[in-house]
Image (tube, rainbow, N blue to C red):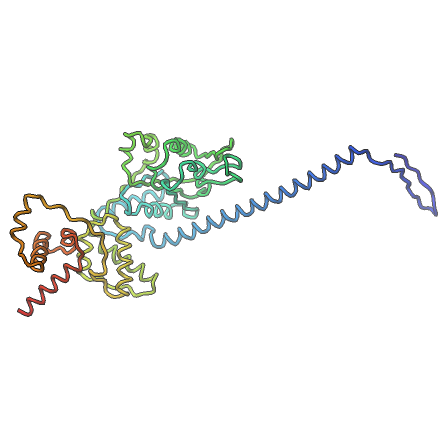
Length: 394
């Protein structure tokens, strides 16, 4: 390429001798521009995806924090109702655990309030401003368990079309609650133990570890010591989790708390329904106190909610309480002849005779009588009303 200049009226014009580009050079320049354009679009797409992912995560964290704060108002340590020795001991344990940060293993039957204990520990701790992330280990698909807890990178497995953070990373700065820990797959227990020891997580498909500042609380209704003996649960993980165990008693072992809990739930549900909290009739309290509550506090909560709806905000009476009916125990065959001899041949009289015998056997306990006879309480109440009416007429 050559150039020359010509002077015209004190102005210089540069004349360029443009030699055509070579074909290869043109192709290279075009390909470069196309590649830059493609990479720019791909980068923009990734940035958009990342923005959406971050927005979802932020929304999820905010939702969980809002939910957790709402729960703390209802179920924080001040929301634990009871005056029994066992519940007072439990509250003492919670107070101790709020100011220190060991892993905690909470055990107890289903419905005793294990998650509520975990929430109370979290909300009273320095981590209360961080997220509380509950995870039900029994609900996680086995093939996705590791990815769900620790996250994965794009391409780690079929269907992993983008990076995903796990629950550990989601709970960073807060508390991770692993419910039903006894159902965690054995191979995942090994990886969890390692995370608990050094705080580092390794997303599936990645070679770079991440640090997660997470406090782990675990819960189970299973007997982990038995699971250890059968090889279902790792002993070293058990000792790592149970640095401070909390055992929750079933409701049937603290019956003195049933009245307080029933009144507490009535107040809560009345506020939600815009009703004035009603009283509980003495007979209804007797029914509740004589019931075994296989579903524990959760069952009592459901019973009270239904009773409030059926009573329409009026005094809760026995007929508003719907308890789980159990099959009465089979009478030994040796008692059968005597029972048949004692029964009148009149069907109505035979029924009355059986109800009276059951009442005598249970010392007048209505709920126990109904369970023994395999019937419902209204039928027993009707029998008693008929007896009273007949007595008044006589």
